[in-house]
Image (cartoon, rainbow, N blue to C red; front, side, top):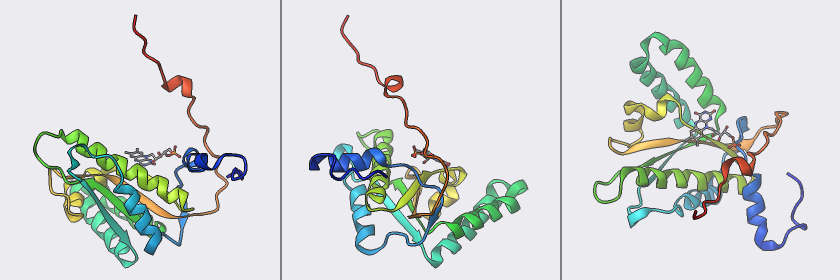
Length: 198
Ligand SMILES: Cc1cc2nc3c(=O)[nH]c(=O)nc-3n(C[C@H](O)[C@H](O)[C@H](O)COP(=O)(O)O)c2cc1C
């Protein structure tokens, strides 16, 4: 990242950080822990939430539990997709071995006036806040879903009984050296319009 600390007025430094965020695939140890991890989780808990339902639920998976979690994913794959179970099991085992930490993010859905989608969006906003916090603290991570995020057995394993559900997993760790080019950011004009009265 370019050294922008002297080029911008102080109130824009956080925004510069935000604009520089990108997802990081290859990660290495250390993963955030202690006070850093608390800050990241607290950032998640600052997400907006209609009706103050506090639907956010974060499940941290790390250390030895990562390997055990990989075995559970392998079991879930056997039920979900028996034909490809062996290949999927190997893929998930390899994935947990190279992932320093996971934060599973979901919403505990409460019945009532607040539509389910708004509770899921609140969980999504929490995920985004945590990705930004990871980046701002010098860590890296990426929001991933895939079949496990939609698998009832995996949801249940992590404490999400329908209608409560996962919105995804955040990988978390320290960015590994990478030569992959940084993708260009979207063109603002392609995504923004201004509505005007006729
Ligand atoms: C809800 C959601 C689910 C995602 N699931 C995956 C996934 O399973 N695998 C993947 O490679 N990228 C997934 N992505 C995309 C990456 O997290 C990331 O946003 C993308 O690679 C673009 O990188 P950037 O964040 O640096 O722009 C997902 C993104 C979102 C918002």
